Length: 199
Image: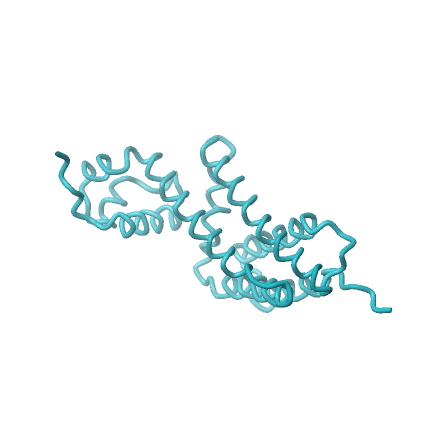
């Protein structure tokens, strides 16, 4: 019978995530992860496989946590959909503005560093972005049904625009754009969503 693991797997994944997040995939050594988690390299390899396998676990864990969080923020009744959408956009802007270390988003970081040459990372990134756009689409469609956003535009297209703005805010934040500018862009993105023409 296999011995039960004597460590908290989620805590190990979070510690490994922080190493990859801070130093990138290439800049992170297994020794760094071992030091951060308190596990020997043999235990890490035994539990998670090699560095690439561990990175994929960490990346999937982060993508799932992030997209689930967005889904919870955006789900709800149609009559408050526009408010939830605005709250979500503002929350992202505030998170970017507060990111003094300019760590940005691990999804964006992983996509930029690894997706071009790592199909597993590219596939997980595509799925994360597809999920995010789907949740935004559902929220925008709800706001359209409630009469708060014009029903003419395709909600998926509007969702793609919002997603592009949010990803762009994170890139601007990493580039050192001032917090007030980040907030102003977020407010503009909310303001330009097409409203129904009143008779």
